[in-house]
Every structure is written in C-alpha cells, then in structure tokens.
Amino acid sequence: FFLYIRDPDGHRIEIYCSDYQTVDPDLEPIRWSLKDPQRQTLWGALAPKSWFEEGSLFTGVTPKEAV
Image (cartoon, rainbow, N blue to C red):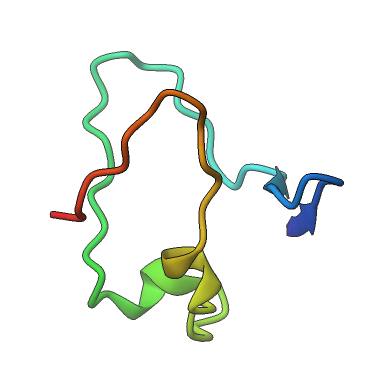
C-alpha cells in the first residue's frame, strides 16, 4: 500500500506500508533498472512523469544534473 499526498507547501509526501523488511546490515541493496517494468509499481503500470520531473527545492542546496 502506498499513498502520495501534497502538504500545504506543495511537497509530495509518501505514506507507505513496506512489503519487505531489511534487518541484515550486510544485505546488498536492490538496484533497480529504469527499464525494469517491475520497478514502476507492483501492478506494472507506468510511473507518473511527476515522479521523475518534480521535486522539492531545499534552501542552500544547488541542484545538479541527473546522471
């Protein structure tokens, strides 16, 4: 389950009930490929463009180009 809402300042907030728990610090992180359709959502639907194109600005932080 996940839900995205906007706070009064327009920041996106994610409320998420995890589907797995990591308790082993030696466990390797999962690396997702942008081309992997399972990465988008559990149901295989395309991720909204806003997930990639929108973000919150932080005071005193200069944005960098994506790698």
